[in-house]
Length: 189
Image (cartoon, rainbow, N blue to C red; front, side, top):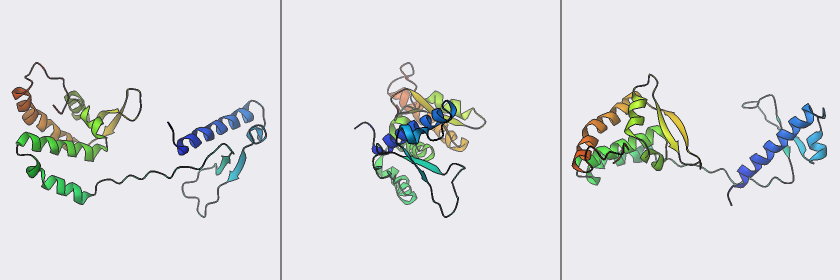
C-alpha cells in the first residue's frame, strides 16, 4: 500500500469538492455532486464554533473508507534530553565527539528535522542562515521523493553554537582526517 486510508479519503474528498466547483460554475447546478456522483452532503454539528469556518458541510461517499487512526508522535521528553546531555562525557572521550553530539542534539531539538535531514546540512547552509536577519535554515525534505527544500526558523544563538563547532572542532578534525582539499562541505564529517 502506497497511501493509507486517511490520505486516500483526503484525495477523494478533494475530487468531490472539485466536481462541486465544476457543477456550480459550469453547469449552474448546486446538486451536481449529489446527483451525478451520488455523494451525500452532511452537516457538521459543533457545540461551539471554535475552528469552524463558513463552510460547515462535508461530503460522504461510498468510496470513502474508514480512516486509519491518526499517528501520534511521542517526542523525547525534556527530562530524557537532559539525561542525554548530562551523559555526553560518558559516551565520547574525545572533545570532538562530545561537541559533535551536542550540535547534533541541538539541531534535532530546535528544527524538528529527521536525522537524515540533519545529516545533509552543509557548512554553507549554516553560514547562510547565520548571516540572515531572521535566520532560516535550509533543509532537504526526505519524506518526499523529489528534491524539495524547506526553510526552518532557527535562533541566532543556536546557530552561533554551530558556527563555533565548525570553526574549532570541525576544522581540527578535517585537518587530521580528510585534509583541507577534500572537504565535501557537509557539517558532520
